Amino acid sequence: MTTFFMLGVEGKLKNNKILEIDKLINWSRCLNHLRKIHKQDESLMDGQIPYDRLKMFKSILLQNWYSLSDEQLVEALSVRIDFMAFTGFELSDTIPDSSTFGRFRNKLIDRNLDERLFREINNQLEKL
Image (cartoon, rainbow, N blue to C red; front, side, top):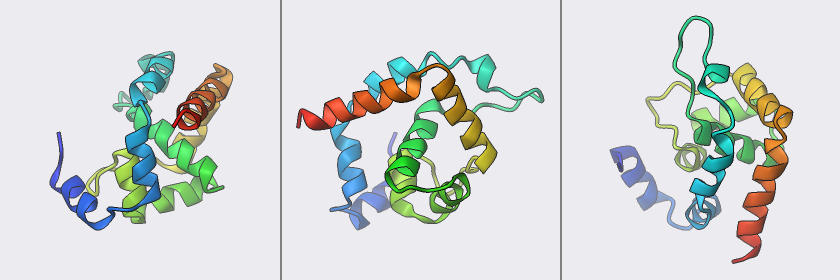
């Protein structure tokens, strides 16, 4: 479902490299790997709904590509429209805090998903 936010972004950021990459990647292949992170692992003790795994992974990708700390990632996702559009976070969404990104990244590492996912992205981009 395309939101008004995304419609506006597409018009303003026609030649944005991040959004071009977003269109080139088959994200469903990444989702197959991300399903290995179980919902019960991501949910908090107080019953909060976990953040979308693909949005979290796309955020980690941006963090890696732009050499951002967890705090800088949160800031960028709060102010950069291209980062929001790439990850799927909307203006009205609550952006995860830095410790949430750290825990998610640690889950990827613990399950060796970080290497598999980065390899998947690189393989897809190399085939273009």
